[in-house]
Length: 201
Ligand code: VGL
Ligand code: ZN
Image 1 (cartoon, rainbow, N blue to C red):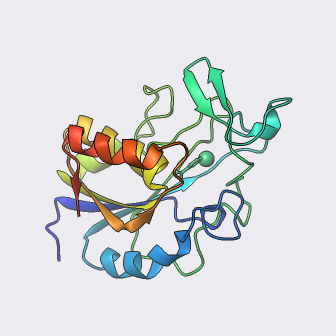
Image 2 (image 1 turned 45 degrees about the vertical axis):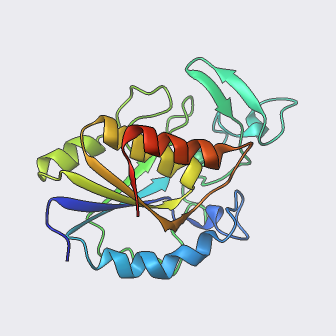
């Protein structure tokens, strides 16, 4: 069992990020049994859930002439355009059916603002609008975070880096993550973890 000051954050283990889903991450479903086992070792488990309104600005379908995986400039910076995914209330937005969600004390939903995407569990992609997660964790005196989930190079990446910047001791359990790898994003993610002191397990 981990100490009460060490929480587990399970990022976006949702149907749309698993094989057969709208934004499938290769082998995304294979991490579910290991995450279920790992959750039993933590007093505090937080789940994140990508949760977009229909017509979200991160969807390629919301931009005439744009295809998924193209980049556009948003007021807050560059944004990858994605296939429609994790639409609020849809089956794709639901957690993988085998994920044991009962031990989670908090489910934090992100990406609900139609104008701003949110990869990180802490801040939207404008890098300043908070989700509220840091207040929850600090209120519980949590000092250390382990991240697992999907996708390694997007939501796990941004969440872990923000956690490190916020002063938590951070590790990522790579065997319980899977990535998208868009033009070298996996290599860049691993390099960033090294630079920011995010430990790899
Ligand atoms: C994610 C792309 C778009 C993720 C979410 O969970 O990594 N990636 N929305
Ligand atoms: Zn999303």
